[in-house]
Image 1 (cartoon, one colour):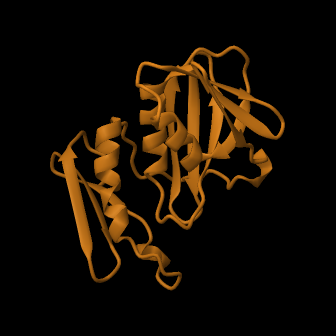
Image 2 (cartoon, rainbow, N blue to C red):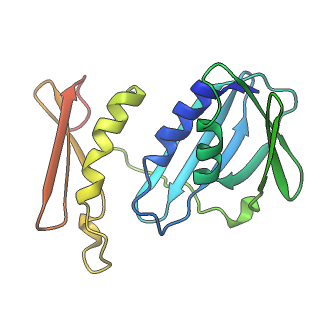
Length: 183
C-alpha cells in the first residue's frame, strides 16, 4: 500500500526512460521493508530504479505494464491509498471503491537491468533533477547504425552536472548545480 501521489511520482521517474510510444515498458515492482522499488529497463537506453514509501503486508515481486500502471495510479487523488495485490497472472490495483486488474508479465520476460562494471563516476540526485538530466533523450539517435548516439552523456563541468544528447542534427544540453560526477 502506498499514497497515490508518491507512487505516481516514482512511476513518472521510471517512465522517463521511454524513448517512443512504440516500445512497451514493464515495471518490476519489488517490496522492501517499508518501500516498493520500481525498476524499468529500456533495451537500448539503460535502467532507471526508483522507490516509494509503502506498507508491505507480504514481501514479493511482480512485473506489469509501466504505462498502464502509471496511467491508473495518476487518476487517484494524491492522498488516496493504493494497494497492489498480485496473483500468478494478474495484479489488482485497489483504492477506495475502485478495483482494477492488470495482466502480469513473467519476470523471466523482463530485460536484464543495465550493469556498469567499471564506473567512471557516481552521483545521487533528486527526482526533479533526474528529469532535467533525461530531457536530452528526445534528441538521441533512434537509428541502429549509430548506437553511440543513442544515449545521454553526463559529465561535470566546474560546479555543473551537464547532460548532452544528439542525433547528428539536433542537440540538447541541460545542466544543474551538483557535486562532481565525472570529468
